[in-house]
Image (cartoon, rainbow, N blue to C red):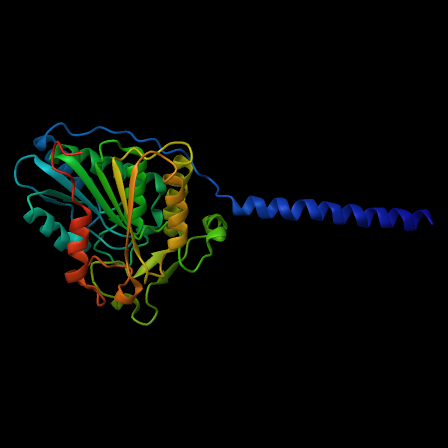
Length: 335
């Protein structure tokens, strides 16, 4: 009788223990891990000459062999202009993605800076080096390009797409010297992952050994354009998500530092998760900052990379004029 009672009590204790452990474990895995406060360490260039020296130093710091098309680009009018435009490419792409749009801004009278993200633009398209990408490096990159742009223009516009969009979002959150941040299809989350599971996916893949997959399993290494990486690293993707959670955490405690933010959605883009982006927007909208949104309709059938003219589904005749319009600043002295 006593043995039966003890057995029953033990069973109940096990059930109670499981009832406590399982929800706690679920709560734990659904919260993002290892989300540091990445402080901005701004050192803005004081003039055009210093900006060029800093850009050359950033270019020279790359020790591995680069694809010539992917080198840092400074399009300068040999003097400080009213507006400097920073263009930040996406994950596994390189500065060539934005080259043509950069020329359009240059022709409008702007100085333009397009720098490769860390571990990008290497001549070896199948490099595993991309898997070393860290959120901290993306934040440091953002600081450096904004610092350089401060010497290239009286006012600074920063535009980034995908991972470059998340990098631009971090800069917008932290840098008061950004007059306008244009964030295009940012990779705060991915289309295949429901928003509530984004943190869990990031946590799990960060613990696993890194792995690589083809962007296109049929074309594999023959994927074009040939200055992009045809594979992606799971660890690199988790670091991009991690930077997004850094932005979210910082936004919950402080309004963005940038003067104005424009968020650009592509309704046809299933690679990233637009609902996850709206989560960040909802937090930002509680602060005192000018935030605008723009959406390319799904009927336009634009791909995730709507910037690179060498993508097969590009429509730059439509996209570029809109991007240029979204980057407009009021004339000096106007509100």
